[in-house]
Amino acid sequence: MKIKLIFITLMALFTSIIYADELGNLTTKQLLKLQKNSNALVIDIRTEKEWQATGTIPNSHKLQFFSDKGKYDTKKWLTDLKQLKSNDDQNDDQIVILVCRSGIRSGTVGNMLTQQLGMKKIYHLSNGMMSWIKTGNKTTKDCLPQLACK
Image (tube, rainbow, N blue to C red; front, top):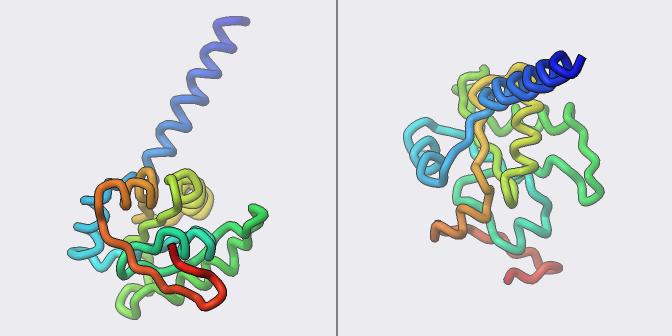
């Protein structure tokens, strides 16, 4: 019985590792290369306050996934994502790169898109904006009158 339990646990762990590989993890250099050479669509899924605090990756698109309370509307988000895709790439060929603060939320959303919805060419920035800023890459800020940029 103990051996069966260990075997089942190992199989579950191995299976989750296989599925996790479906979502591509990118370094900042890889993101820049894909953005430049592949017309990749970079989607920042963070909140408005996070965008204001750090800025965003140049040429990325702000499309918040989780609310401040952790709620989300996948159907609406996917509709908004489809509108952001370039006209030439309305099919599923355009690469989508998800970005959050630390890579946890973008990994969660990316895994949902690949595993549950079967989407392809979905990546996320490992360690999120923290890695982007740490490696010295520039950000852009769109300051709103009611929120001061830092």
